[in-house]
Image (cartoon, rainbow, N blue to C red; front, side, top):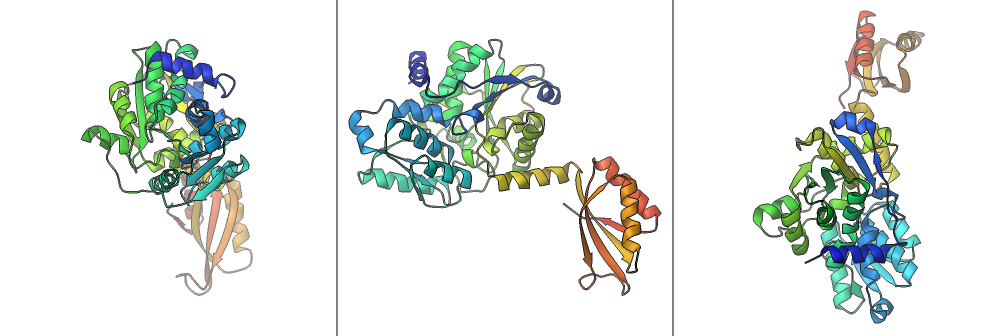
Length: 403
């Protein structure tokens, strides 16, 4: 279906059009995962994701008549951004159908690149159906986000780069949505390094590739929410399924909590912002028995287009999970100086008070008492336990609030 010559031609075609991203070593992630861990920073592409490779490779092969007609695509965001950016660069009119819940950063960026954006449906598949209706009505050439050999060949250039950047590579861990990235990376890297293991990662909420591999054909799954919107695909392609079956060694799934924690780890450790799909490889390496201890492993960080509001929620939840944010309820006698004495005890333990709420009318405490709820910033679980012990020893009724 695709040969090394096809992938090399794609790489030549993309020269100067897309960024050959670095593949950086991370000592901290290596220690955390007991591997030699490298990160392929596809989130550094101009539009923030690997999708530029496949989109540009396809657009560059359109005829003059097709370019004049314009292109139409469906996207949860990143593919649409890539088509919009390279369409503008090549003078090709672009129409993108996105789900109504597409991240704001992806929506506004696509419009900034000059694309016409149509919001339709609650998920990628409904947006895809609408885009097909437009092209069937003569509205332009359809650019499939993953199930097209030209797109897959573009994504496969990542594999060629990895084989050169890490010649002693043992394994690549890569996100799976429709399957174009995983298929392409596997094709590219194994064309040069046949012994490299390629492991795909899906969100547990939408394991479309896992189900397709089990069934031997694409399976349409029910819609489900996931923070990894970039891989929220209900049905994989027939081309990508065939390539994944032949060239990808395993496909695993990760939970929403694991994805969120991986986003936070990459932000704190690597100072790298990734979206849910981009964090999926690290989530798998940290939480699944992949058999890669001591191996030289590359995580493909496929994209970094995450809304700051989503990132803020992930950071706060991560801090709570790590014990660096905690809420406690304390019952006080409602008298002058009571709150001052409480805060002094907290200050002695070097915890930082972020918020205080008093509950009088809406509290089960006795008349004359008040319940105070405090949000505290701490260094972790050990400090929380020490502080709670100190408050109880001082005679306070204390309750740690659930997350």
